[in-house]
Length: 152
Ligand SMILES: Cc1cc2nc3c(=O)[nH]c(=O)nc-3n(C[C@H](O)[C@H](O)[C@H](O)COP(=O)(O)OP(=O)(O)OC[C@H]3O[C@@H](n4cnc5c(N)ncnc54)[C@H](O)[C@@H]3O)c2cc1C
Image 1 (cartoon, rainbow, N blue to C red):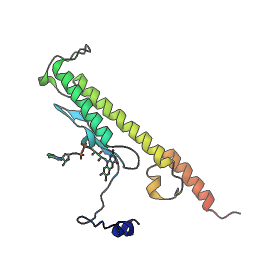
Image 2 (tube, rainbow, N blue to C red):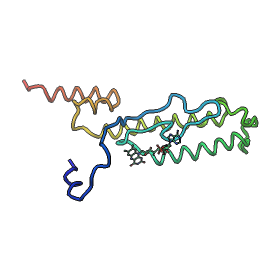
Image 3 (cartoon, rainbow, N blue to C red):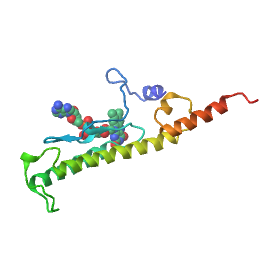
Image 4 (cartoon, protein in one colour):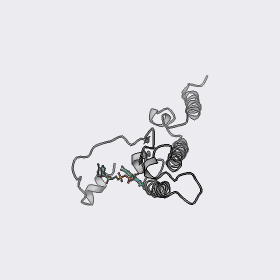
């Protein structure tokens, strides 16, 4: 659709153009023994529904703080004086990272449902139905069937 516009302005493809899946995806576990995943390595979002750079910067910054607290034993009074040797998945700061990642994922799913739910032009199309909450997809499909049926 925009190819003629780009061509007119002298833009040329750089290498071969190829498609790639761009759905949301996440790790099953966001951390483990002495590791934490951040940014897209932890969870990546459907481009229509949310931001990625902001989330990557924030999750990396938060993880840095949590690692520091875990290593140094923070002033927050948590029992975390065991140091790097105990930086495993039970460490309270590592657990906190896991919880924050799960909240981010839940928020992403809510946001995705909101954005895709706002589009009502193609209720019968699989692409849109797959991205709706189950209840809304069922209701939309019923409405679509009613509208598509010949009136009696
Ligand atoms: C087409 C497209 C459009 C997008 N548009 C937007 C947008 O408009 N706004 C927005 O907020 N987000 C957008 N995003 C999402 C955003 O780009 C990502 O969420 C964000 O860049 C994630 O940052 P990151 O640091 O986690 O990962 P990345 O930016 O992928 O950085 C990871 C880096 O690690 C390097 N690397 C990988 N493996 C190794 C290795 N073994 N050793 C050393 N280095 C390695 C990679 O080369 C890369 O430089 C878009 C994504 C795509 C694909």
